[in-house]
Amino acid sequence: MTGKTSAIPTELGTENIGRLLKKYAFPAIIAQTASSLYNMVDSIFIGQGVGPLAISGLAVTFPLMNLSTAFGTLVGMGASTMLSVLLGQKNYTAANKVLGNILSLNTIIGIAFMVAALIFIDPILDFFGASENTLPYAKEYMRIILYGNVVTHLYFGLNSAMRSSGNPKKAMGLTIFTVVFNTILDPIFIFVFDMGIAGAAWATVIAQCCALVVVIRHFSDRSKALHFSKGFFKLDTRIAKDSLAIGMGPFLMNSAACIVTLFINQQLRKYSGDLGIGAYGICNRFVFMFIMICIGLNQGMQPIAGYNYGARKYSRVKEVFWKTAKMATVVTSLCFAMGMFFPHIAAGIFTRDPELLDMAAKGLRITTLAFPIVGFQMISTNFFQSLGMVSKSVFLSLSRQILFLLPLLYTLPLFFGAEGVWISFPVSDFMASLMTIVMISRLFKKFSILKDGDEPSILGSQL
Image 1 (cartoon, rainbow, N blue to C red):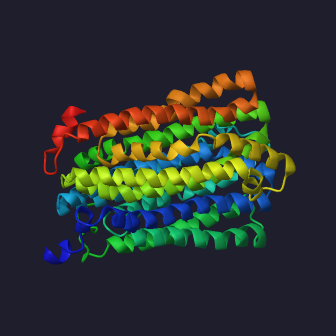
Image 2: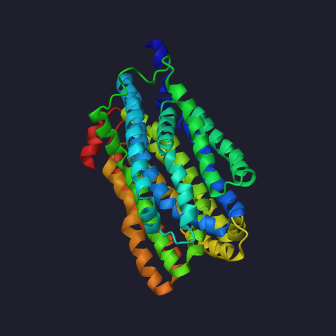
């Protein structure tokens, strides 16, 4: 056991928090930035090589892709949180069982989602805002993405486990590899082979297949403390239940994103037509780059917070939260500055169509109005998630999108037309952030009664 335990990241409980965040968050930030570029690359090549209607068709697929991501995070994020806590408790046998269940659960859920979505692809895309002009593009792209759905679920789930088990740089390297490989394949498939939007989809699937091979080989090495073990692939109902419960927060957040994007598309189609949906697609891709950096910060914080919570080192748990929140605020403030002062430059990356460009630039300026406070809201939501406080995480995940954004999407356009759809974003961000401040303040007030080494149930009973 000595050789194996040396591979466990016990530094999470002893190393300086600032240095740990650099070690765990920076690779995750690079990986997530690369992941956002991964999505942007498809949009750029599709917009420049296929046309503005193809951009709108791609935007129509966002709700379905969000839903697919929701099912992937349901397993991956929940299991990764469990892994961090179990490693903090030095329960390596249980951690290996969790790893095996990531493989089993993601395979089952990935296949089920693919089959259901392919059967009902036409009515789904029509419901999500596709018109007779954009449906062919959306359908062609989404069918290929769905063929690789199991691969996507397995790759993201196991990559997250790799990061949580003390290999953040390798996890980052794999994500960068998928981006670079996808970027190489996109122009070849779209321009050289003249495959259009289908070429972008195939490039995505092929890149993820190659990355999955590497991550499976990593966990097949039995010399590692965390590895695939014989018999551990059998679905453990208790582990499955616990990981799904913990992963319910990000699942509901992504599911809510699916629902919200559906209504956004419907409202923009009603007030602005197909190009309105395309403009939202451009804004979404640009803003998503900064959001993904915050997600990278969250992923860096998660194993540190989870491990120290499991090890009952509460002072370190609090410290990692505040340092991560400050970093996220800087990131989202930068997004605000870019959106306010350089919207045409940002939107111009995706399209040369003047009408679409003006519409996207205006939408970007409005969308980013409340972004300086969005980073804090995101970190707080994930902080509850990292400690296994599912109900708090779920509530904060849903408040911005369901409690505030959805009603605003229907009421504000009645007074302001298409502009009302865009105004809904900063207003809901502001309202959700106020609620977050209240909840995180209550949490830290209860945290103040704990000393390192106290039973975590004390905290739970107070909440």
